[in-house]
Image 1: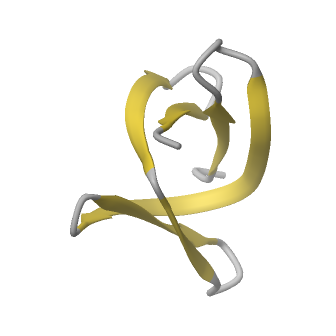
Image 2: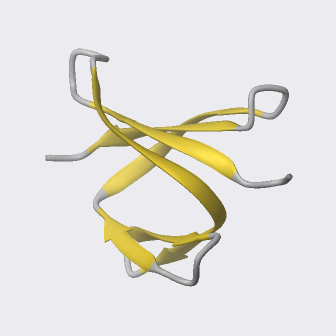
Length: 64
């Protein structure tokens, strides 16, 4: 499978939220739109921090 787990961190680097089964990330108007395996999507106010390809993990830093 090619889907990834997305971890959102706060300003101190603590994990705030994890979203599983993400297949696509699209930057849109300063935000990131996350599409999941089941056809759903959500928009987050975050910036890309790290991509761990071997772990299928994307780490985002929360902007709020």
